[in-house]
Image 1 (cartoon, one colour):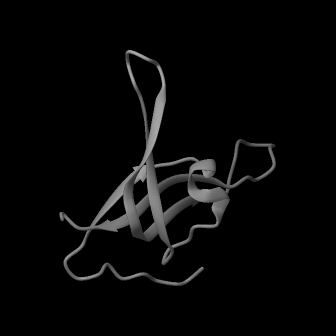
Image 2 (cartoon, rainbow, N blue to C red; image 1 turned 120 degrees about the vertical axis):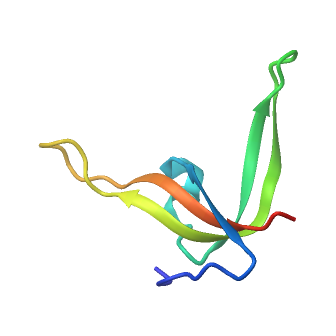
Image 3 (cartoon, rainbow, N blue to C red; image 1 turned 135 degrees about the vertical axis):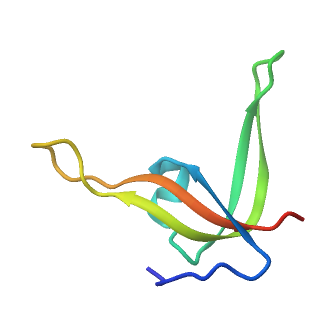
Length: 88
């Protein structure tokens, strides 16, 4: 935990849903800088291509849920991640 992260001047914040596996197993925290990859399935060949979508973006917030169904052990599940981006 790096504490509170302030949105840098000139940046906007976007939020998107992720799973625990998509957020490097819980190692990314607010204040971290990460690369966000995209995977696209090509319609004709069915092959997938993976490419960097956003490079070195600042993680602003991560929504981590630590409760589960009644009578079940607690678990950590990531719901949403917010990052700082520019329009450039």
